[in-house]
Length: 422
Ligand SMILES: *[C@@H]1O[C@H](CO)[C@@H](O)[C@H](O)[C@H]1NC(C)=O
Ligand SMILES: *[C@@H]1O[C@H](CO)[C@@H](O)[C@H](O)[C@H]1NC(C)=O
Ligand SMILES: *[C@@H]1O[C@H](CO)[C@@H](O)[C@H](O)[C@H]1NC(C)=O
Ligand SMILES: *[C@@H]1O[C@H](CO)[C@@H](O)[C@H](O)[C@H]1NC(C)=O
Image 1 (cartoon, protein in one colour):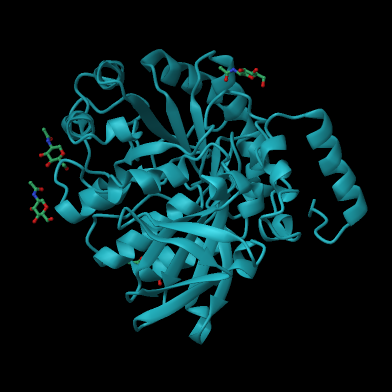
Image 2: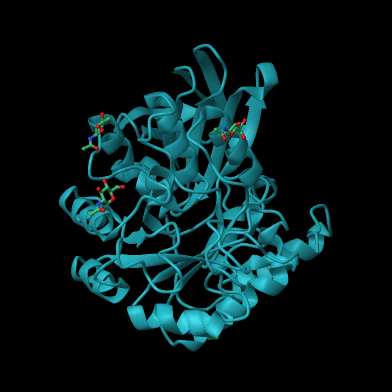
């Protein structure tokens, strides 16, 4: 059901008017009201198409902002045990990451054959969940919408209710549901039974759909999961990260409170990319309202990794109450390597990223036209990595020199009448 992009403009405006005038829907109105604001160009809603924004259709009350936490897979793969999970819980709290919002601790692989392996999880999952909850955190688990998981352990297909009840009895808060050994049954058929089974437990369990983007889940999964993977697995390389960012970008119009596009977990801190590349990774994931699931060993963070993962201003972009996914709005230079990504934020602000994907230092310019501002509008520009206002009064465009593979991230606050009077 492709949405009409060039459809009947008059009708669209009538609908917008209807929403604004009668506040029919609290979740849609704040965004649409901005379209009528004279600081934004008339094509603002075309640049930031939100035609499927914020459906809330799963109605489990979760994912009002993208999920944040940690997942064991990227660093530990199958080599996990309860000691690692407990020490990670301790580290999230003691390093201050939990206070910044990283609350889900997600076990990223199977625990054993139906019951947790007594060698790796001798105390059982209930005791582990109690430990994690005691720290004010939440515990996530992994299963598969198929006959077997990717590590060839039993999956949950055809016994979703039993498994959901078991997870709920342990006090599990989050389920990542994978796609291996799926018997060729379409994901649209395999994922809803677990949604219903989780719901029937009466426990609020975040439902993370992981069908690798194969059946374009953005088109249907908002009614089924709290997030859906839009791509295959990330790996700890610049090539993988950039490829995945671009693939995920295609579905920006479908994200919103209640259901998010998921371009996979963070590789920040795992060693395969430079500091600048990891800053880009974190900036673009934040701007794109991706889940911020740390994928490194948080018991042993370098100062650089810590600085990136704990940047409060960047996290605030990701967790902004408006919940609109930012996107690539301009690409110039060789192979479009000088990129501007941007998105609307609450309070009539914009987040703007200048992303240098070229193989040399580059000056990148964000024009007001590209980001959807009227050309005469004055803007205060705050740099979220330098933590300071770099110019209090930019008009018509903003430029910066950006290191190789680095990404500068800014908040643009347009002057309103009340601002300029102050
Ligand atoms: C179950 O689904 C109903 C209907 O969508 C919803 O109102 C309720 O909050 C859900 N309960 C849980 C525990 O997810
Ligand atoms: C738990 O797993 C970690 C990481 O793989 C490993 O270093 C540690 O030796 C394991 N501990 C036990 C008790 O198996
Ligand atoms: C990582 O992903 C990139 C881009 O998709 C791919 O070219 C590369 O082969 C992958 N590397 C590994 C080790 O899987
Ligand atoms: C901590 O990380 C560094 C690399 O950043 C590594 O050399 C070291 O072995 C790690 N220590 C532990 C205990 O894992």
